[in-house]
Structure formats: structure tokens, C-alpha cells
Image 1 (cartoon, helix red, strand yellow):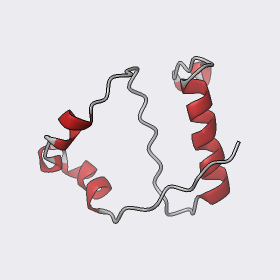
Image 2 (image 1 turned 90 degrees about the horizontal axis):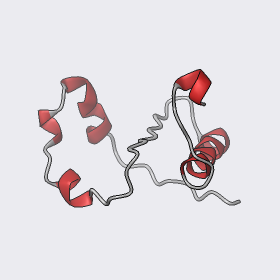
Image 3 (image 1 turned 90 degrees about the vertical axis):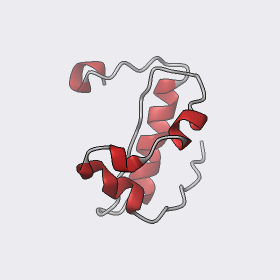
Length: 78
């Protein structure tokens, strides 16, 4: 991933997480689905900060990600 996409995944947490995302999308994804893998390089819970931000302050091209109905995330089985 680092050579191809510039994404540095360490093997303990981010590598396993990304592998699970890939597996989930391969098993359950429809062509119309949008999948976002947000690699923050951060282990701090930012929920409070995220909830305090109004998505309307983001560029208009991002609004659709917040306006779409929520889709349940399938459970990945190892």
C-alpha cells in the first residue's frame, strides 16, 4: 500500500483494519456504494469534536456524504 498508494499501514492495527475494510467491501459492496477509509494516524477519540462541526462548512462536494441515508455496516468475520 505504501508504494502503490502512499498509505503507510503498520501490521498491528492499521494493517488489520484496512484488510477488514477490503474484505468487507469485496463481500458486500454494490457498485453504487461509497466506502471511506479514514486513516488519521491518531488514536485519540475525536467524536466530540466531530459532533461539534457543521458539515455545511465543508466544500459542497462533500455534503452528499452527510446527506445520504445511513447504511448498516456488515459484520466482518475473521
